[in-house]
Every structure is written in C-alpha cells, then in structure tokens.
Length: 509
View 1 (cartoon, rainbow, N blue to C red):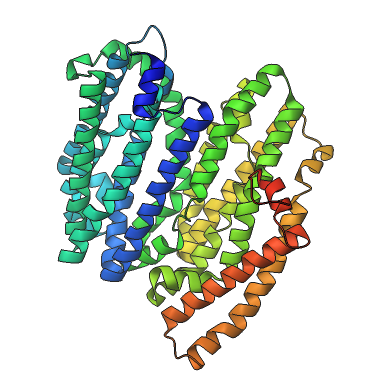
View 2 (spheres, rainbow, N blue to C red; view 1 turned 60 degrees about the vertical axis):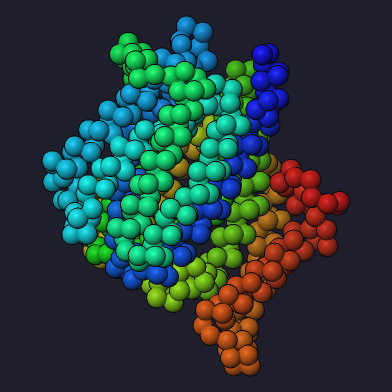
C-alpha cells in the first residue's frame, strides 16, 4: 500500500497545517470534556473530600510529570531517523516507562516516607496503594504522546486523545455519583487508566508490531543521552511553576486545599491556545534563524503576542470584574474564599503574552538560559515560600510564584533583546494593543454597570436564588462585555479589525 493510499485509509492529513488542526481539535474536545468533572464533583463532595481528592490527584500528576525524563517525547526525534528501528524505539520507551512505574509502585508501598512528609493528610496516606497502581498504569501509556505522530499517524493520536478523554468522565463521575466517596472516584480513574493502557499496548502490538523483546539497552542509553538535559529542565520548570501547590499540600488541610484548587483552576482552552501558538512558532523561528532574518523573528513573535492578547486580555479584564460570580457558578458559594486566589492567578495571562520560548530554542547561545533562570527562581521560592504562605496564605504563595516568574521573563527578554537586537523601533509591532486595551476598557465599563444593577433586580423582582442570580449576571455582563469590546475595537459595528488582529476569517469588514 502506498503512502497516499495509507493516508486516505486512515484519513491522515497530508499537510503539517492539517495535522496541527486535527490535534488541536482533539485536544479541544478533551479539554472541554474534562471541564465537566470538577464542577460535578465539587457539588457531591464536602470541602474536605474534594480537597483530599485534589491532593491525591496532585500527587499522581506531579510524580508522573517528574519521572518521565523526556524519554517518551524523544520518540519524535528518534523514530524518523533512518538508522533507528521504530519498533526498537517504541519498545524501549514502553519498557523504560513500565520499569519506572513499577519502581514508583514499590516505593509508594514500601517507602512512602518522603511523600507522607510532604503530604500531611492522613487521607493521602490511606490511598498510597492506588496512587502507586495508577502511576504504573499511566506510565504504560506515555508513549502515545508523540510516537503515533512520529510514525505519521497523527489522526490516530487525535482519535486517541478525543475518545479517551471524553469517556473518562464516565469512569470518574459514575462511581462518585453512585457511591459518593473519594475512593470510588480513584478506583474509577484507575479502571479508565488500565483500559487506556491496554488500548495503547494493542495499537503498538498490532499496528507497529512492537513486542517486549524489542527493548534495547543500547537504544535506551542513546535516548537518555539525548533526553536527559531536556528532562532535567522539565523537572526544574515543573517544580517552579507548581511550587505553590507543593506549599499548600504541606501546610494546608484538605478544606483549605479545596479552596486553593478552585482558585487555581485551569481556564478553558487557554493553555491549549498558547501551546498551539508556540508549536507553530517554534519551527518558523528556527527557519528564520537559519536564514539570519532577526527582524522577521521579532515581528512574528510580537504579532503572535498581540494575537494572543486579543483573547487573553479581554478574558483577564472580564474575570477580574466577575470573579465572585464566576466562582459561585463554577464552585458554589461555599468556595468564595478562593476569589482572591483566582484573581491573583489570573495575572499569569499577562506574563505568557511575552513570547520568548521559540527564540530560546532557536539560538544555541540561549539554550541553557531557561534552565539557569528557573533553577535560581526555584531556590528563591524555596527560601521565601514558607514565610510568605504563613503570612499571606494561598494567594500569597501564588503571587510569589508569579512574581518570580515575571522576573524570570524580564531577565530572559533582556538576554533575547541583546541576542537578536530588539530596539524601541520594534514597538510598532505592538501598536494594535491600543485597540485591544480600548475594547477591554469599554467592555469592562459595561460589565461593571450590569454587575451594579442586575443582581438586585434578579433577586428583588424575580426572586432568583444566589446561584441563579450569579449565572444570570455572568451571562448578561458577558454578552455586553463582548459587544462593547468588539464595538470599541472596531470603532464601529463590524469585525474587520478583529479579523486583522487574529488572522481569522470572521465575516466581512
């Protein structure tokens, strides 16, 4: 069968743009599906149980992120190489991941001391076994992150993401609704993880022909030599960005952690949009660097920041104003204590608009800058974390992390500026920000007006309860904010400037 026939049979996109679109849609489906779970669980569990569940999942996701050493991601580098046999690469990745998972399981059961020192909750201690089992199973499906894409099977990867993430809700929510216990949810999640691992094993066995005997220590040594520098950087960056979470599991009880978890919720599609933009920019900046076109690198990264700002700045402005209503709708009034944490955490939307990662990856002289800065930043957090959380609580811990993150970004920008010659003249690439800021101010004024009038009317005239009042206020203010934003952005009714800013085909100007 020819490559063309194979693509048609599997409906595999033939272009890079098509592959990227398919994966983005799949990730969007998975993201939207995962939004359901926390909003249901928070309504069937007490704060203590919801906080305990959050601690257990924080432990699982943290260990899973810290022990991978970037081996699975190295599939994208090694599988396409002519001297490497794909079966040996995938078999080695699978074998390594299962060995690491088995090591974690044994460690959880026989030597849980370090984990129990960090997590003070007795509830976490009682679920150590299921944590170990979940880590073993999760590691068994790591290779599906990039291996199918490297094999030219991005449609398979997209289908895997969309289907498995969508059905996860069934395995997590049904046990929670039926039994109403943290343990039932964790066993449901483990069952889903086992089925996913079997699906992965079946795909590699029957589609690629991978066997356990394909594990090769020589291949593993070569992969480790390539991936370890990236793996160490990943560990440092993860510890840095999640440091406030580690502070909370060490110093806070389950109820306090539940409030913190609500305040640091992941906004829908934000990271998906950001990561997609960086994935698209990285090869483009690398190409421009090879051509020596630094001016174009500055232009495309600045324009990418402006396009992201078209989404992120309105979102920031609206949610800062409507934080109380947003938390009430998503988590009920019992979690209003997370409003301050939520508002602080929103400031990350400003920091991520400074697009520097594609430039750092493209220039050899900058390749260790990220590791050095995050290592120093992590040391600062380790020193300052305890006094900050003791004096200012969870909001202070989040603010500390974001503050150091912003300093890191500014120092990185200074080095990048010297490397590619950024000057004041390049501010012209950011000129469209004035339209976005004007739209945000006008939309915010309308939202504030609605927030001052609508709740009293809904409660007094219609007799709505607090939750329905919050939902109604959020909906009406959201519609007026979007309308006001577009009106001020365009300077009149129309979508021409929004189309120019985003690069999307939205109606006619």
